[in-house]
Amino acid sequence: MGVEIRVEGLTKAFGSQTIWQDVSLTLPAGEISVLLGPSGTGKSVFLKSLVGLLKPNRGHIWVGDRDLPYLPESQLYETRKLFGVLFQDGALFGSMNIFDNVAFPLREHTKKSESEVKRIVMEKLELVGLLGAEGKLPGEISGGMKKRAGLARALVLDPEILLVDEPDSGLDPVRTAYLNQTMIDLNAELNQTFLIVTHDINTARTVPDNIGLLFRRELVMFGPREMLLSSEEPVVRQFLNARRVGPIGMSEEKDVSELEAEAKMGMDVGKLPPIPPQQMPTTGRIRPAQHAPGAWCAAHGVTPPPGSFIDELGRNWVEEWPRYVAAMSSPVGGHQIGGPQIGDQQVAGQQQPPGARY
Ligand SMILES: Nc1ncnc2c1ncn2[C@@H]1O[C@H](COP(=O)(O)OP(=O)(O)OP(=O)(O)O)[C@@H](O)[C@H]1O
Ligand SMILES: [Mg+2]
Image (cartoon, rainbow, N blue to C red; front, side, top):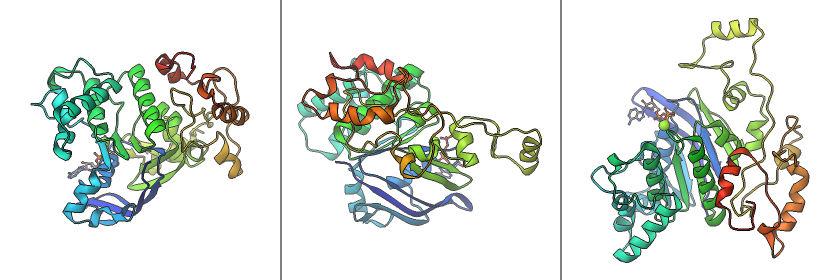
């Protein structure tokens, strides 16, 4: 049912180069969190630290009552089984076909029979849309297919925690929409704790429950999606609006003269765009850890930007939500009412069961 990860005061350096310092955050059990940050800020290093592949210099990573950086090798090995990881480069074995790549963790960590291994591998390959490619070598498939094979391998042990490093890089927008929907559906069904690293702003704005942003060796902010999407903090606003104006420059940090020039010309990071409704599972069912639209803003006295939580059909999801929850918890639930409509859901909508709109 998902596992909480609590990171406290984590610092990582390679030699004299500090990558990030004093990072503290909690990945709530069963929720989807997204980690953003300019290239080179250490997102992949963070994921590798979480899974125990890199040792932090200081700080703690609590998974239940186990503090990962300080576990003896045998316990670390056991704890790692809770994690499924999709590495940024896919990290597939080049000499193994896709079937054997995906089967690898099952053969390594379980005593399942070959027929059972085959059943599970084919199930995961179907889930990521790779049936038919199982005999191919990684060198013979496209970049996007490699990503999906990596995701199938990350899923094969049914992990409680999924760390996914740029699942959408090199993927076309339609496939990105499908992949996002796959992760949301998985989370709705199995309630795993997700951490997704992405550069895709649409993904960051619509998929997660929580968003974090790394910049200048610090975790600038981590919290509920609505908190970051309504934040006035310049770095957060610039990043989530994908703007050139703001503190982030081409080589990460702008210098004082550049910022002064922008201020003189009256350039700013612009108005906050509306907060979109969160993307729903294909079935339309409410995820176990899903928050009501607008709940964070209401609880914190924040007025969301005009037009927030309104879908493409003009429905206001702050108002719709109580009705939706009531309808979904009735015996005929998901086949009665459609969830929020946002761009990529319409693509994913093709996967719906008959009669359901989502
Ligand atoms: N094993 C390593 N040894 C030394 N330095 C490393 C190692 N791994 C990563 N780094 C350095 O850590 C920094 C952060 O790298 P990382 O790959 O985590 O960035 P990132 O935020 O994932 O970037 P991108 O968005 O481009 O994937 C970089 O300066 C990189 O060179
Ligand atoms: Mg990276």
